[in-house]
Image (cartoon, rainbow, N blue to C red; front, side):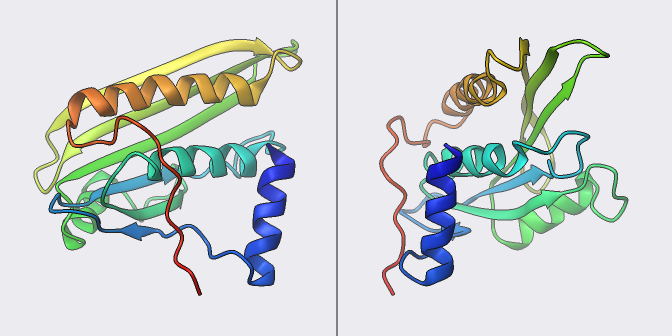
Amino acid sequence: MRYFFNLEDQGITAGYLPPLPLTQKTGDEAPVAIALTAMEHEPDARFAPDIKHFVMEEYLSIFPSYTVIESNLDKNATDKNFRQLLAMADKVGAKYLVTLEVDRHRVAQTNQWFVGINQGIFTVPKGNMLSIDTHNTRVTFQQGIVQATMNAAEQCKNTVREKLPFVKQNQPLITREVF
């Protein structure tokens, strides 16, 4: 996965491949606002860029219309609280706000890792909660932190599909604009 994302990033940097669109409007459905919590601030950030890249692409592929209002939200920052995220989502015309927090950390002094995703689905502008999900597991480093995150993301996406019926059930490739 790291090799693929590195090649993709090199292609974007070299101008051969356009970056993923952070806003996409398809059809009549109002966009879904997406806020992803930063992972670079965690104690062990070896896999943070790859996991973040994977989660972002997975979520962008299921929404017909979306706007990423925050892709690097520092959960300890005081300048972007829930009400401010709702205001940002409302400003872009979103009907729903999906918040994602990917968490992984080593359990004490063991070889075990805690890996999980917290997801919230809220209405915009009022902030009514449609769903809160937490999917997590403990794995050893060899069992695969990235694989465990992929599994948790799939479980969260299933909840999105259940709560938001307009979500794509199949995942076609994300359309990138041609230069």
